[in-house]
Image (cartoon, rainbow, N blue to C red):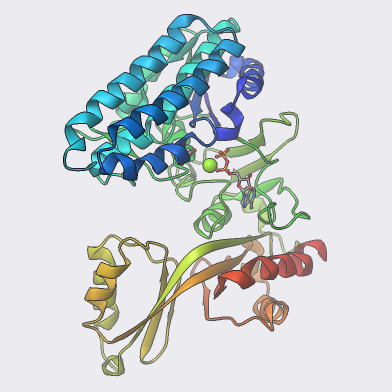
Amino acid sequence: MIVMKFGGTSVQDADALRRLTSIVEGRRGELPVVVVSALAGVTNTLVGLVPASERAERGALETAVAALVDRHERVAEELGLPDDVVGEIRAEADRLVAELKPHTGDGLSPAGTDRLTGVGELWSSRLAAGALAAAGMLGTWLDVREVMATDDRFGRAVPRQDTIRELAQERFGPLLAAGRIPVTQGFIGRTADGRTTTLGRGGSDFTASLLGAALDARRVEIWTDVDGVMTADPRIVPEARTLKVATYDEVAELATFGAKVLHPATQTPLAERDIPIVVLNARQPEQPGTTITTGKELERPGDSPVRSIAWKRGVIVINVRAPRMFGMWGFLRQLFEVFERHEVSVDVLASGEVSVSVTIDDKERLPRVLEDLSGLGVVHVDENRAIVSVIGIGLRMTRGVAARVFKTVQPANVEMISQGSSEINITFVVREEDAPDIVRRLHAEFIEGG
Ligand code: ADP
Ligand code: ASP
Ligand code: MG
């Protein structure tokens, strides 16, 4: 079997769903499981409704939900789908509004927030299943929450992979054996006590890979709006090209450092089982896309050592200066205990004799982290920073790349430098407003120039 995940733009309207149908049709013989995101823009709209729901503005919530249902209904009509598809979408909206009711008195709980922001996938999957069925395939809607067991970290729930494997085989196995095409949701999961969770923004890619690993898929396809994983973010580098191949490690670094094309956790369940990920363009399905594997064959000297450049905005640099740290053991442990306690992940670390700098992107938890760090030394915070990361498996074998990187970057000010222990990236921090131009210059130097 294979898993085929379609992102928001690949299900956004009737035309997109027609393309989805014909792409799935072409893969029928490979026993696909289809995973979909919410229609483009729907999750953002739902996230925007959270504050109103917290203030218990029921009218605003109901009006906005009704408008979203209308959008789905128009798509269903355009595709000529049977009435029961729209009926299910409406019923789901009614259940949502009813379930959120008990919370509205004292604001929306984290669980209520996930229930609300995750509803887009429950709707879009009805349209996709309906579209496949209408095209004569046995598209069968399945609620992924029945298999996607997670903990209760709402907003960024952690999947329980052993349970998922067991449940996925139990639920998907018979459908596939019966020649059906299961259509299910990305992004959402469920706690052991039955509450809806979400895996974090962009999490549908992660759902696809969790299901791919659980079902021993032959490959996982990520259908999106670009030709594959590219040498840079095409929105800021028009010259960016598509990579034919990439390694699990490269895409892990790329996604961690801002390349939105894949959720940062996507490759983890698949890398250990050696299941390839193929990133493809739903508007150009005949293009080969990018195939992501262990890529042993890519570690060839002679290729350009830099294969892609990523950047991430909204980064916060925290510097802790502690003269007492000189010659002391245990300081870093105390420092990292603070981040662990608040469950804030650190992306880049640079340390000197008496000071340590780290970057985080979690603005919400920043005040609590700072409060605890103040006990360790003098804390200084710089916001509006960006991380730029130069990534390539060939960096392991090539000398002098760092010198070339920093020569290209000057005269911009570089604030923190780190070369990951995986040795496949050189990463540094700059002011946010400098980053796009730096990415373009690095791309011209290492990729356009060869
Ligand atoms: P989907 O809705 O299909 O999940 P996303 O918007 O999450 O799509 O991700 C695809 C987008 O990622 C592309 O449209 C592109 O703008 C952006 N992107 C950023 N960096 C890269 C990169 N290195 N390669 C490809 N796309 C990238
Ligand atoms: N719809 C969710 C989001 O926009 C999940 C996804 O698209 O991957 O974050
Ligand atoms: Mg995405």
